[in-house]
Length: 231
Image 1: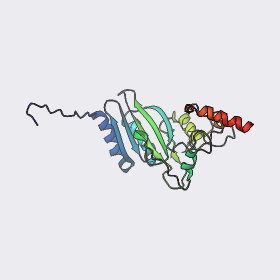
Image 2 (image 1 turned 135 degrees about the vertical axis):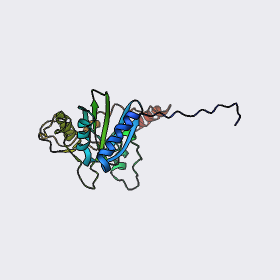
Image 3 (image 1 turned 60 degrees about the vertical axis):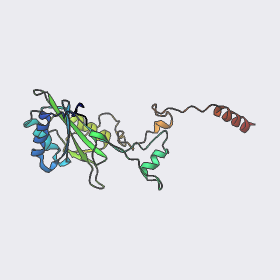
Image 4 (image 1 turned 90 degrees about the vertical axis):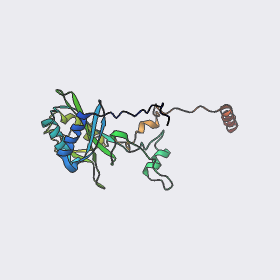
């Protein structure tokens, strides 16, 4: 390397405040703390065991001053089993056609090791900093997804948990009032699950699917073939 060349070192950006918060969670939860992701100057995500869900919320509220519950929600990471129609190839890939293999899917920061994840967003209105906490649910073979209610920690969790229970079918253990918010009484299924069949798509295809225009000449060939069949 020439002595006249400048060596440019990539600056390592750190966020000591969020690193300290992540460490505090790790120290408090022990084995219940799985991993963290910090976007310096912007946000903090931590992934925990489902068994530490309530403990993490209590610690955030009582020790870190995060008294504001922004939201609780869930995610279904099952690849969409339906394409244009109910019998599409995507459906067979997910449900086990003999010669098909599910496509590999990456989940980024929000993902985990199981199909379903719970997420909560907590915030300190005094320190103006928050954390998104996520937990894998349904990680025991054959077990239905479930998690403890956060109502004893944040009373405002009730509405969010009812929505998760209704739309994703994740049981909220200890919730005192599991009543539907959106669906009619007697409705079967959980519409936010990826494998819930949207039968209406047989009548009206998903608007995001774009029909591919025929190549020049194909339309004429199809019209000739139709005329021949009619004759």
